[in-house]
Length: 318
Image (tube, helix red, strand yellow):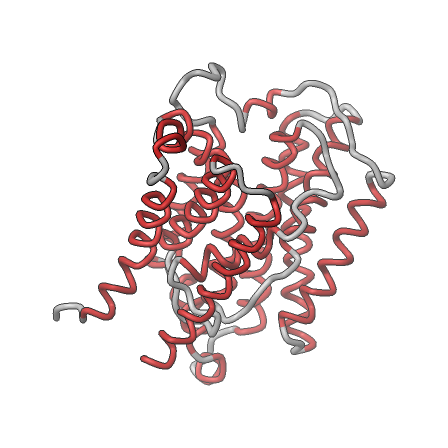
């Protein structure tokens, strides 16, 4: 059975969007001379890592029919926890475990509240946004947490700044993307996520363990958010409780631009990665054009509205 033109357009849409954004910033010859260089694309890939890994977790949540607005705060909290462990003399692996598990615990709490109290994910995670941010400021004594030099600091930077080879963080994101895609498409757990997002009532009638499934989805996504927080910490080389404000909008926009539906049941890992790349290229290109920060924010806001509008159009067409 041949795929319909509509399905092909939906699948190719994120790629076309990425090409259009790159082409737009390539019109100016002065900008093009730097924007299209290998070195700049390495910078773009590095800037994409935090949102890309976050979008992997958000893909699981959105495909299941949920949403998580607490991502930015969880990233900040995980970074502060990881920095505190290093500051207190903990080893590299202890810091990794502490940061990632912090995200996982917050995810489990989100999932547990959503599943047990049957409150809308929007409300629960909006509350957690404030709780996690407050906890990060409390643990960090309302200031950045400095820690001794660590091998982790090399995750988001190349050994040779002039090399075109991306840093380790980019490869971590790619490996996780492959594993997540396989999990979503080739495992029973992945099929259950799609079934839950397509119709929760039907999934419940079919005997799926909806309660445990929601907790597992948010808990797993939280691990991704915790890892994003760790990488954000290594990028800044400090734990900052005020970092990643609003990054949840970039992550959600990346997933929706990539073809996922906010109503659930639809989404791909590849699409989410392309969406994250689009967001990074937009920010990088805006900086190359010399546009002020408020112009970048307006553009990102317009992209988010367009992404949701396209999602609504797809739903009506289906």
